[in-house]
Amino acid sequence: MTTKNNTIEKIALPTVKNIIVVASGKGGVGKSTVSAGLALALARDGRKVGLMDADIYGASIPLLTGTEGFKPLMLQVGETPRMTPAEKWGIKIQSIAYFIDEKAAMWRGPMASNTLMQLVEQTAWGELDYLVIDLPPGTGDIQLSLFQRLDVTGALVVTSPQSISVSDAAKAAELIVHEQFKIPILGVVENMSWFTPAAHPAEKYFIFGKGGGQRLATRYNVPLLVQIPVVMESANENTDHYINVGHECIASYFSKLAELITN
Image 1 (cartoon, helix red, strand yellow):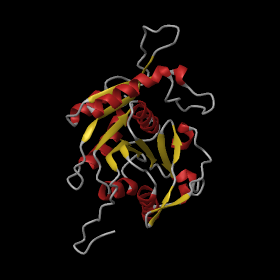
Image 2 (image 1 turned 60 degrees about the horizontal axis):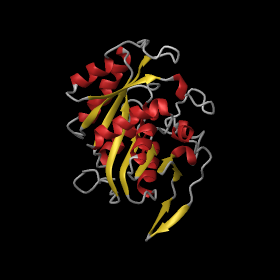
Image 3 (image 1 turned 90 degrees about the vertical axis):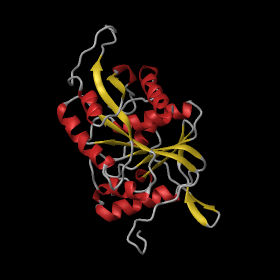
Image 4 (image 1 turned 180 degrees about the vertical axis):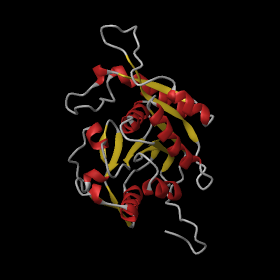
């Protein structure tokens, strides 16, 4: 929506204090895992948290949070109807997958963006300290719409150590800091930093390379907030290759991330 002077009208979310977007340049680096893990860590720290799945073409937050099959209801809040989010671990969760799962991949451009913004605006979030938004990978229409229409507090950029992942993540970072948006990058999260076998806890194997996250952080003069290893013990047998973000082997990394971005 634009005003008469062609500026884009912001969506007002008066009950949400902070909006944190989680971005990556490519898929498969654990962006959604970081989004869900951060939301859980914030909630465990006593914050009121919402988690928005904005990855409209590859929504995985319902699977990561065990909320597949949830069907939102419509509530009348004042004069405006609102959609109920799912709730898990004290987190309010919204995703396009709760409405039309298999059809979402066919959506393109303005249709996808407009639907997503409607979900953001019309969900009954209630009072939130943090709304964590899991962006799609890359630099498409969804990112542009969100950055134009929401007052984003800050962004996290997720990468794995490989050079190609870092290169793609830099493209996402360029959009975030573009003069049109000027969103602060809170820091870089490097996922899959190393692998430590359970039988040899003192050993680290840098199977995807080393130093990529730090190079990206240095480039944008932001901190490398946390390096998250590959932890096989945290694999959830019910979600195949997805990570159980609440598992004790991985939760400490998300707790550190939450502490760093809230202090």
